[in-house]
Image (cartoon, rainbow, N blue to C red):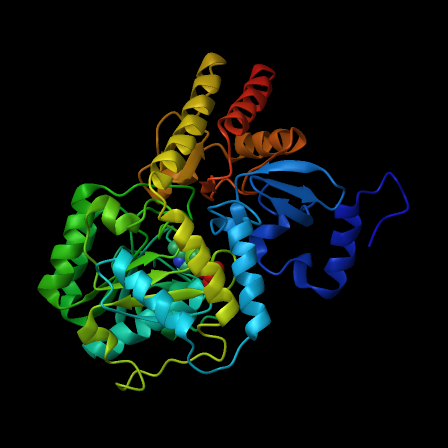
Length: 432
Ligand SMILES: *Cc1c(COP(=O)(O)O)cnc(C)c1O
């Protein structure tokens, strides 16, 4: 659909039309640009580090489909694998050899996976892992941390109650209070708070679920004592530790955040990169827990599209590329060049700004110091970010359209791409 009025952008007319048939004009809320304001971009195509919007404008992409595009858009080997798989059949609802190959590869790359089950989205992975943890332990309560996102299932759309250890409250309309009450929401990076929670209700807790690097409240890195407390307390009280690596898996390194920080989970959830841009996700971990799943055990979980051969092919091709020697060294180096370049540019113009990266993901903050908690993330200057976001967008740089999302680089980004992005920011900061 193209606009005949040259003054109206195709993005705008597509958005107007979309709003008539899709709530908010989008199929996932953050895409609507509500946080930053303005009209969302409709993308036409992507190639390597770049995307083109509906008006044909080119952007250097630091969203990468929210992480999956770690080898860049339309990598020829991934496209070929998808085409070959599609030509063999789009799906069977029956086992295929490629699922076995992917399961074996995941278990080989992540030593904490003794068994794994494929699903189609991160939400499905976390929802299923929690049911499994409850079935395994015979307990109902789960613990999550404020600012961590684990998909949109009922028990995970929960915020803290009025006191630290009170029952969680729904953070979305439509989530029953009775379900939210089974979730305890604690502060991220607060080892003492977690210890207290276990002291009070340790025998009720089925699982603790956490993003090892929190990437859904901008980016917050974990404190060592927080990680250690989680592992020790879960073991001591018989709770299942679920590391939600939907974002960090194959993003911060080949062994995910668990390898990066050396923390051993009981269950792991994966998505994003492991699907190479198509809907593939997984959960897995200890054999004794995974054997509780149907058809072996009594915990029911299923999926018509689970292990879809086209999605599995995209995942396998992507995971083959990330295993190339030096892949993560270069990816980390690119992210570092970006965050260091932006930090230096802001400093030159006396703008309170900082940035950091872990592997191929990064956080940008309009604040004087790196945040270590949800509250500190929330106190960053959101208006400054929004101004920066739009100025960068004008300059042809696509950052996540929210101050509370992590950013991503891909192996397709070149040193020159990063340098151009830093130069664009420098120019914006000089007129700040
Ligand atoms: C994206 C994400 C999810 C949800 O995955 P979907 O595929 O969007 O359902 C869950 N957990 C984390 C940490 C994520 O980043």
